[in-house]
Amino acid sequence: MWVEEYRPKHLDEVAGHSKLKSVIQKCIKAGDIPHFLFFGKNGTGKTLLSELIGYELLGYTFDTNFISVNASDDRSVGKVRDLVLNAIKHSTVNGYLRIILLDECDGMLADAQEVLRGAINKCNNTRFILTCNDVTKIIEPLQDRCMCFEFKPLKKDDIIKRLIFIRDNERVKIELSEIERIAKESGGSMRKAITELEKVSMSDNEEEAILRRYLKKK
Image (cartoon, rainbow, N blue to C red; front, side, top):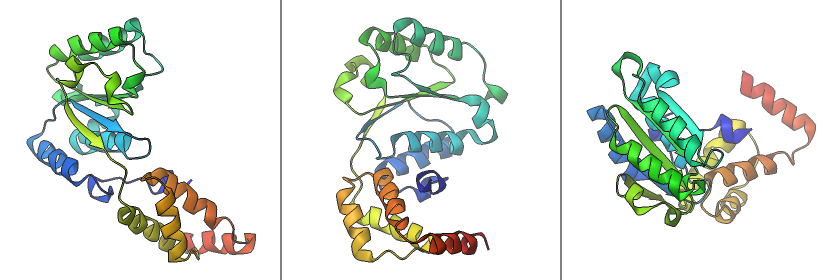
């Protein structure tokens, strides 16, 4: 899947979000981050940037000091309390920060969000990154404890630039007009645009697809 294959591995590869990336770079240079709340439509990079913050800041301790959870799966008070309190009471590896990513926090019950708010107050070496689509479903006391950023739909030109890069790297014949159409209809979602680009590329005949994969490996 091209969405995974062309998933950015460094902050400077991420399209758009220049203000947020500037803040993140300063935080990484300082060796710490605030608690973040990222909100906006699907496919605009909230989870991606959260993970890249972890990679950049934690380095080789990422696997042990970065915890990612879909908050809508375990949204009850008990589940949140067990997850958060158990995580923050244990020391981190080699004294590094621990980062807990809670995806889709707008699916958490209000009481569970209150538990999370209380846990944030007790944090020393643990930082939280919360993501959601609908920020109005996040209680204000929790918002107040985070640095909040809205992830707006990506600009058409940013999407076109990335799609052209992928097209050229994959050696597929897709006209610029078709790429512009895909970018326009993506609604600002890079994920949707890349998925559509791959779909269009599959309209080639099978022999061309085999040759393309062979040439790419060389």
